[in-house]
Amino acid sequence: MANNAIVIGAGIAGCSSAYALAKRGVKVTLIERNAEVASGASGNPLAMLYPRLSGDDLSSQFALASYMYSLAFYQSLQLPATDYSACGMLQLGFNARELARIQKVAAQNYPASILRYVPQHEASAIAGISIEYDALYFPTAGWVHPQHLCQYLTQHPNIAVLNTQQVTHFSKQAHGFEVYNHQQLLAAAQVLIIANANDAQQLLPSLPLQTKAVRGQVSMLNSTAISRNVKTILCSDGYLSPSAVSQQAHCLGASFANIDAPTAAAMDVTPTQQDHAANLSKLNNISTALYQDLQPNIIGGRVSYRCTASDYWPLVGELVDSAALKAKPVRPSAPSTALPWVSGLYINAAHGSKGFSSAPLCAEMLASMIYHEPLPITHELACLLNPNRFLLREMGLKQLAKTIASAHKISG
Image 1 (cartoon, rainbow, N blue to C red):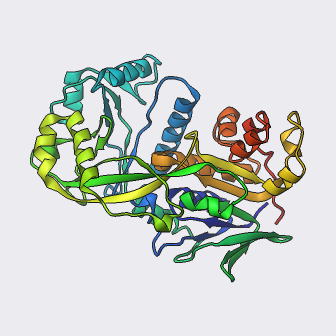
Image 2: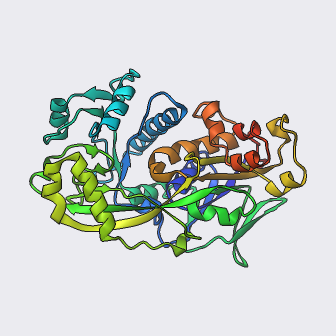
Image 3: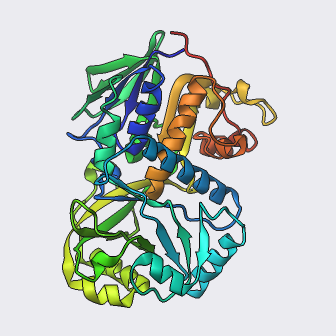
């Protein structure tokens, strides 16, 4: 079994991956290009924890599995009330399309402990303010303080953090992987997990990840006597958090814009008035009264660039040697064991705006693969996360794109 590992990227994907290995006794070196952990898309003031479901399709199954796992995970950490709150969340049927969606989800007969349909008057009682719509109520949804969470995870005694180090390349040697910042050797280990979001493609130039950066801006608003009555997260086409205990401010989000930026370092992180206005428009869909009350109260904002794949599924699992596969293609009917897997090389990336729900489950999935443990999700869902799927599809290996590697034991 592996007794040491390197994780590149200290956002929620990297920190949860490092933690999943560390709690199994693995010595982990976590490498981050910024001075602090959770400085990229994982560094927003608050992260909302709730699933967006559409029925019983595979995407909804994954969203729900991720949500339930993340809630149990965060509760197990016993975070202080200033860093985590299971305050509940209302998804409002604010237009015909959303009303039809939440009614369809409610018809799936989920346990009331997960979600239930509530009429307008009950939604108002739950929210603490007057709500104009019926809603889906998720009683255990909540929010978490991203940077404090990541700092907590990286305090595990088996994790050593290297900050302000940009990984430029890595190599596979007989003893494992070596990771470099130009000519400087940063670390060597038996397992390497790439979890640096929009920068992952630079480290894997011959493997098409098909990721894109999605610019998102959240707005921070000073609370008022009226808005402090809000007791749950309220969600339309955007979300409003209750006023956070530590800040007496609301988090309102979030804007979405696909951008074409070559690297994370080249991305503009300056908040714009246009995106503040877009967020306020989403607040108006939640509550006209809250919109009128909070509109003048913007005190700041934060821009980040979420990493998402073209098919909106995360990239999680062991990687193949793309050059070797192109040089010697396998038959379409070949088993997954015929692929040239790079033993010990993994990725956990492309979680979009739902990383704080999906990354912990995916981190546990990677650790389970490495340690030959039962996977924490169904085999069907794990196959949909295959990080080699775009390459395999390009090569006409569509069936292999729907498989996962047989977990390789790393001898220690």
